[in-house]
Length: 279
Image (cartoon, rainbow, N blue to C red; front, top):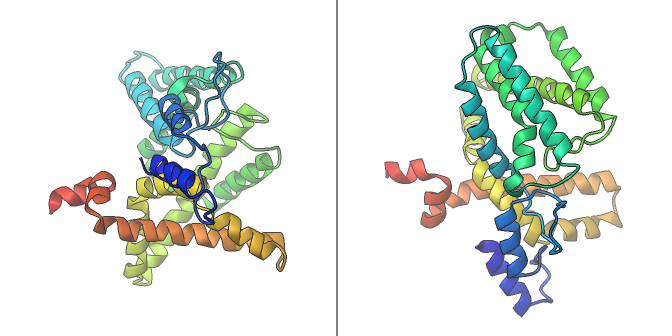
């Protein structure tokens, strides 16, 4: 609805400097919402279908969760986890190779392609104590594999594009383990140093990830601040510094979203329903 409102505003005020519409029309926005593709689509239709943007993740997560939970309900008398691993591996490869032929609606390719990540998350949670006891050199190996595979090219679950799907899957799990460990170290340090207020601010950002995702999409698709910043800075500072300033803007924008939304009743009920119910 916000994107439609902005598209209408841009039609009336096309020369404004701060708002634009990536899709450009209400019809395009509705098509993007109905088809739910995160990137450029391969379809049998002649009509061009715009991509929905960052919200593809929510659609893929929804379908992925349903598929994962149904498969986990299966019971095998022998080699239960190994059998499920085989099923998830096949589904992931189906999602990868299918994306080269056709883009299914509602980011279903990505849902299939994410099956091994769901299973990896399950194993990490189930064997938490084992992962907690991994030595530092294990995480250094994970980091090295992640760094090496990153040099091969971009791995995108959005459209299931990968230079080497097998290496990319392994390194992606490795980088998740590294980030989890780093987060645990930071959290322990904050508790040890009595940095509770700062810790609460970080937890607030984490709890508002859905709101951040949705408004980040609006920032990407409709707000010109990033583009204006880059144009202003490119002539005076190195490109990497301009990008860094742009990223700081993105972080500030995300932080303001989670601080302001709880004070807007309608948005609060959408993005923080538990807080609304408590009151």
